[in-house]
Length: 394
Image 1 (tube, helix red, strand yellow):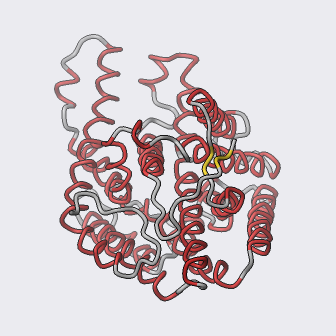
Image 2 (tube, helix red, strand yellow; image 1 turned 90 degrees about the horizontal axis):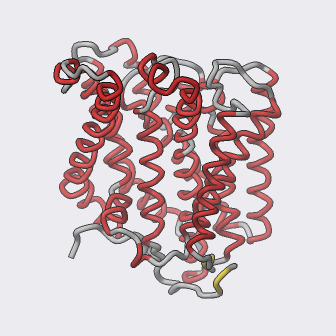
């Protein structure tokens, strides 16, 4: 059911979408932290259920698809409201807002990645990749199967978003809603043509997953959802929202466990499973957005809303904390002294998840307060439609 209510045309902020941001980050964090395959500890503990855990870990990677879909939904909504309020879209101000929000933290992440490369155990031979990432071509660099072992590698997804921003404001500025629908269908068509080709060519997972054209399907879905809702909010009971979330997870899990769309066994499943798997990934992302949109913000935990506001920092820093904790092997000696094997495995996995997550939360909070906030305040000067408020600002 769709609620007819529309929010103020001069402001668009839905706190529940901050919760979606945090959920998307948490999924990506789990994807990078939980063993993806061939972990003897997990197999000894879970036996025949180990493949289910591995498939779940791969499915968590679709948190990035959720990020892309949410980003496109919000960008389209804000630009359409700007066009309605001001009569057009100010492309220059759009780019200024995006630069002030993304570039400072993005290039800080690249700088930290460069430092890590030259520390003991780093990979200075990968420094050439920094040039590609600095030009927001990191996704294509990794799709070409070039090595880039720095913790800054997660920034490939930001380069995909930046490529989306190249055409997004122009599309909304010059096309009617009808033609925007057509543009989205064209993006989906291009994405699936690439998937068909990559399936026929027997491409590996990196060539598919890091391909910007493949990921544009998620952006198209976010724009289509914005157009379909037309500023209205879904109105569902709690049990219906939970069913939508369950359906989203079923889509992601099936795409990995049955269709092998992320090539969890190292084998290309073919064109049709790839097309179906990425379609399910996109559908799952849309279901999550629909499940959260229109939910009562007062029922949302305040900490989850806050963490959603700082989610960009959480994403940028999380692979650095995983990298540091794995190399420092904090707590490894204590764990070895525990005689009970299942307890030792659970503590090992828990420490591998809990410690980097806690460090990520701390670093991202400090970064948001002392590094990002000044840029966010400058960004607000160029805002025509008010969106996400600055956490902690008066």
